[in-house]
Length: 324
Ligand code: SF4
Image 1: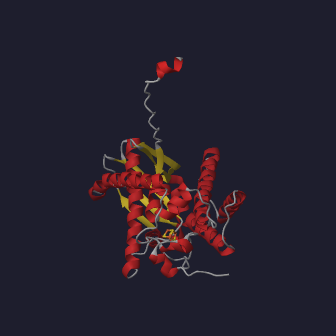
Image 2 (image 1 turned 90 degrees about the vertical axis):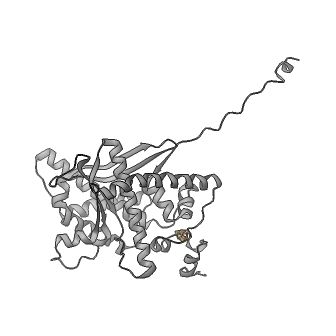
Image 3 (image 1 turned 90 degrees about the horizontal axis):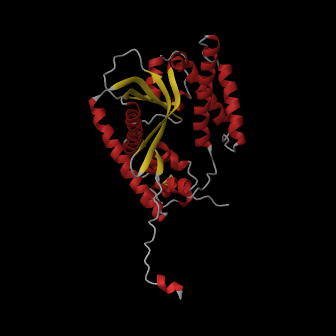
């Protein structure tokens, strides 16, 4: 029989192809570090959140500011006029963005939340608009690097011209800005709460260090500064005479990439990134997503759909069961 001719034939099984995944600083690494369980269930198992309020606030802030800047640029190119958007322009852009998010099923929680988001955007436009819009070099600036086993990626909200101060040769004259739809971490809180806030700042610093490193890979130089803007700090600006510098001090954290101390941290941040990717891959292989030993962000837990089924003892202490 002919098949007997092939009886001894040995064919090696094909090695399973390794998929090279994309990992983003905020969507993967920071989300995993805040809570592996929440990250795994929403990103890996693809659960849908019941409430998209945090998502809504973040999207609305980013999209409205992008629209305002696009309109400013368009007018400047068309007529040469540098017109700063008014409160009415903000309201119009806000309504358009809310409408488009609504059609995608992403809604605000209640009217107060909606009003607050609009107030924050108007305040930001009044405070930063006059200097910021004309200095924006690019928006949604993509960064990417091939790290061998995976791709590392990030998106900088805005690149801003950093002219005005001297720049060392290893830096480019730009600032990278990232909008945060939350409050600035308050390290003056007593005890453990203050330590948790300091941890949050470490994570934000990590994000900016990775962005700075990716920027250098793309352009050959570091950006000069990084700015994190905590939009929610503008929500209750009651006193109209508050000096601009005091508001910025309250709403921002800046990183000076010309500082040699920060330079040393940049390479370490990339190593940490690779280690966290390794942990995520391990959890993915087992599809096992434990809650963290110690929660880093109580606000995230308070808004988490998984809080009634969370293994964390800390969460069990402050989340009370609700019975019908
Ligand atoms: S409640 Fe907190 S610790 Fe528990 S799964 Fe949600 S985010 Fe994670």
